[in-house]
Image (cartoon, rainbow, N blue to C red; front, top):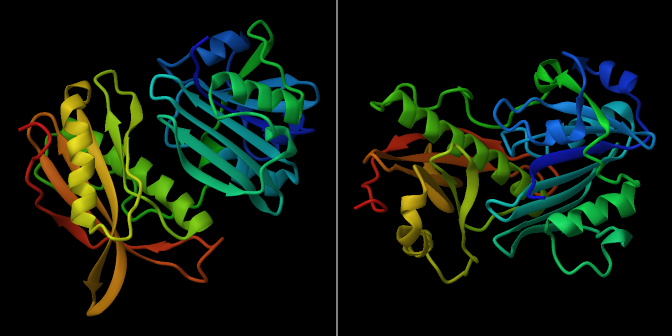
Amino acid sequence: MALNNVLTVICDAKFADLVSVGVYARSSVMTVGQALASSDDNTPAVWLVGGNAVIIESTLGESIGLWGPLLAPQLKKVAVTAGFSDSSQTYFWTIDTPAGTVRQLLVSGGKVVNNSGEPAPEEAGLPTLDEATLLELLQRHTGVVLNSDDTAIPVDLGKLASQMTTHTPQPADNWFSGEDLPPDVAGDFDKLAKLGVDFINDLLTQQGGFSPFGFGVKSDDDLEVAVLHDRDPNDTPDAELDAMIDVIRPKSDGYRAIGLFTDISLTSSGKPTEAIRICLEHKGGHSIQLLLPYEMKGFRKKKPQISIAGTADWLPRLWV
């Protein structure tokens, strides 16, 4: 089976626990297999198995990996998250406790993107993350064994999602609405920028830095990791950007839009500061650059303070 899903296991939890924090049943029941396959409308569902409550999402969307950090402290439970995207070969494993996130492992394209926290004992002997090892990890750590014939309850997560505190620049819903861009291009750029900044937020919080990377929007609207670049302290941000472009350009026909993310230094309000540089390009010829200064307060385990400095021109380089 090829999975493109996020499974968040709330250990020792009942459906009533989820209702208490804003999760509601929305329609008649379905099977776990149907919930895993509902990529067209991404209907989330809750599967009750072995004394655990499992939130099933059928795509790796903007809530990727967020339910665990939100629910673990509220419910005073351990939350274990496994994310699969066989189409982009992206897999992640996260353990959240009431006291905070204790383990994060993200592998994309065969490369380890994030490896923070103490590995769980159940990870011993597993060579890497893929669909098979993630399912084995879930079974070892939580006792959950995937059964497509089990019953799942379609749910509304809207009220729960509204409790999330965003750390991204405002306005959060449409950063590029004021730019001279077609609505479909602005929509693709919004998706790429928000997903990338959420990912960087986690990396800055856990590690205090991030290596350059790129996300892509495919023709079927799927979002995936398009490129990863091992950071070299001797490289300039422009050299890192050039290296990623060289990797993506030969396979650019497989994407509709690309977002490249690098860590740079600039001057903001007369003071030197670190910033996220996002270079966005669309197959139709549109391109733009977004600069987001950030400040680490207390370094690790505290969310970076990110502000928006504005947009700037960036000449197309991928589809030329």
